[in-house]
Image (cartoon, rainbow, N blue to C red; front, side, top):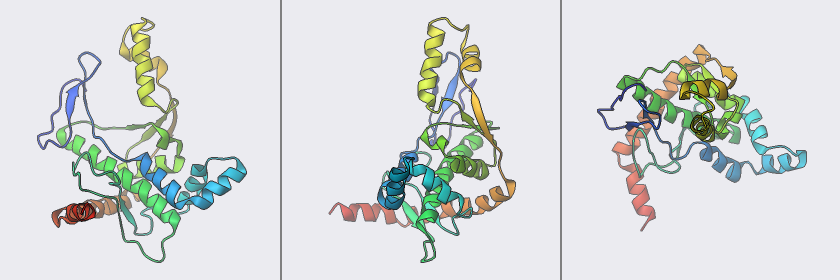
Length: 243
């Protein structure tokens, strides 16, 4: 950002950027890709074995299965606080929760619900940024989860915004390389370095019909968490487990 945009609700931090004259605001998630890793380790044993036999990544099989599940995971919502909640709720007692689980749900629906739940959490952060006055026109996806085409499209649909995928998925390392190139005087400024070094390899456009459906699920997601928090369900559960 060209100037600091503070959050009066104290839900998101704002700080000076390492680039002179720039500012940044961010929302930390304690468990994002690690939530799906937990699913892989604990529930996707058949996929792990099949992937070994085929010489492929088990996530490839999980992604393929998730594509076959309807948006909204057939009425299943995951609150993805598997390592408590950071931004925007900052709740150390919050825990991972599945709501709407029935005998008709499959493991694959749980996997999609996790992807959607992590994205709902991200959307809540983005919405708070917008509330604070940050202009959000498009979103760039990075990290290991960006390898999943189905998750990328889920994100575009939930945000209702264009999502771009970087050629170099590890954005932190890429940012360090940009600054190193600047320090080595390979480029005149950060903007020039970024223009040469940051490449977009794919773009996901949102399906606005799915976005409308996800808006309804998103409201239930937020209400469900608030109801459990206000009833002290998470805090009581955590304290009971520590006895």
